[in-house]
Amino acid sequence: MSLLDGVRVANAGIELFATELEAQGGSVTRVDWRPPVPGSEAALARLATASTAEANERATARMQAAHPRLGGIGIARELIEDLEPGTFLHAGPPIEWPDMAGPLRGAIIGAALLENLADDPEDAAKKAAAGEFRFVPCHERGAVGPMAGVVSPSMPVWIVDNEPGGNRAFCTLNEGLGKVLRYGAYDAGVIERLRWMSAVLAPVLTSALEILAEPLDLRAMIAHALQMGDELHNRNRAATSLLLRTLLPALLQVDHPRSDVVDATQFISSNDHFFLNLAMASAKATADAAAGTRGSSVVVCMARNGTDFGLRLSGTGDRWFTGPAGIVDGLYLPGFGPEDASPDIGDSTITETCGLGGMAMAAAPAIVRFVGGTPSDAIATTNRMYEITWDESDHYQVPALDLRGTPLGIDCREVVHTGILPAVNTGIAHKDPGVGQVGAGLVDPPMAAFLKATEALATA
Image (cartoon, rainbow, N blue to C red; front, side):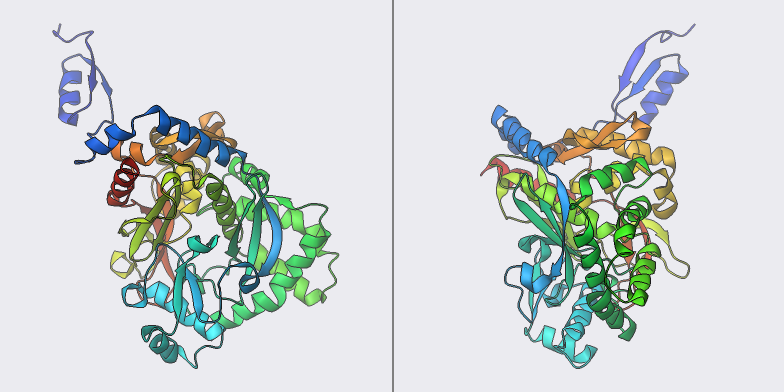
């Protein structure tokens, strides 16, 4: 009989200790513990107060109360402040042309061609390099954009209203897969599709929405899609189906040429990601409801521009805290590999900011076929996210976790304290402009951004 028979041990160190103890008859519970990020101790101590807790309660209560509804579709220049010809919104924190990654440069080139501000791609790039265009983060104008995230004045955008908070958010309409602007493509086919979306798709959808008895309840639709296997970032098949099912009776009544209605319906039906942009705008409206809560350590924005990752806190106003964008670890399309990948890019991490996407992977076991891993990995990922969030969603629930609410309110203090980073799943863009998507996978945000944010809040 071993001296350790019946002894119960909690192991928070090297795995070798646990296996040796078990071999000698001990009962070992493994604890996933890591020391706080070096240098963070003073800031964490200053923020370990009742006032921070109270602020986080207020911030997450506003997120819980948020009720995004689809208010319609409008033209970007008519809805978004200070969006004049030559101004382009983009994903992620602020950046200028010399530092832009290939996909973002490609999307700027394409948008300049769309707006008739350049004669050809070379002319567009030359004007951008000469400072003739102005670049502004989507998040600084109440908008979000997937991947490169470029929004130009003439583009149609979804209007998502959060009536309880009195705020709204905007996002472009999803272009589909393949060579698309958001992945930096800008050939004639890309521009033609964007013009069709403005001339046909947006007007048809606008007419259909006007026939509906009331604005679409996006919060309810997202909750339903989670029950059907979506996580609302890289898997939107159920949500897109629910959207089309809801719109179809109205689409049959709109006063538009039959061919236009058929084309619009087929476009949505053939694009499982069509709902993604609505999920993003819904999450933006939800997160913005919590912004400006003095003293709160809750993250209300995470975004990437292909060069930098940036975040904003509820308690630090409009300040960005940045670190280098990472390379996505995932599955690649045939003929591509990590050497082809652009660093992480897009505003779509607004979904994770609100407890969806990578935070809710347990709700979408099929997502692992797209980003790698196993269904059990997806469940473990969501369970780990509860350690760094302040609350659990009252509205978005995970069937595989006995309908537990998704992790809500990323607490930057806990990210730094535990060393656990928010889970993010995402698409992978080619590093060169004009190529498009080359894969999808998982990526770690840079800890440096969370440490900077924690230190800034501690001295605010």
